[in-house]
Amino acid sequence: MHRGKQERIVGPEFQPDVPLLEVLLYGIFNPATIIVAFLMGRKADDKSKIMIAAFAGAAAGVAVLYLVTLLRLWDTPTLARAVGGVFVTSLVAGFAYAGAGYLLRRS
Image (cartoon, rainbow, N blue to C red):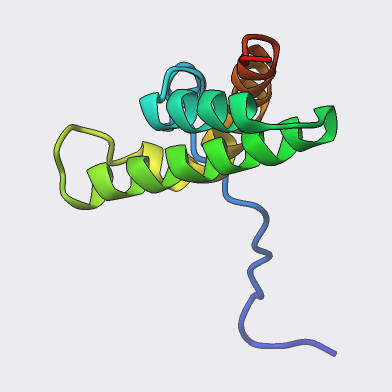
């Protein structure tokens, strides 16, 4: 069956303007991720709760990044589109911060 108009196939849209180094840096060095994951790691009474602390730290970090982007406090216009990558990076970094908090907790 021949149609008069050509159908356009739409594939995934890659965003080459999102700098991956910034995504990594915002995920690893986000102060909210560090503080929340470390403090929750210190309060954890079991090793299995380290992942919960890491998740909470990553969520707090992404929330702070979202608010900073929304209020335009610094230039992160393209980074807001890469929030999934920032969350995953924050989760991995938060696991390390929560683990450090768990190891340094008071007995």
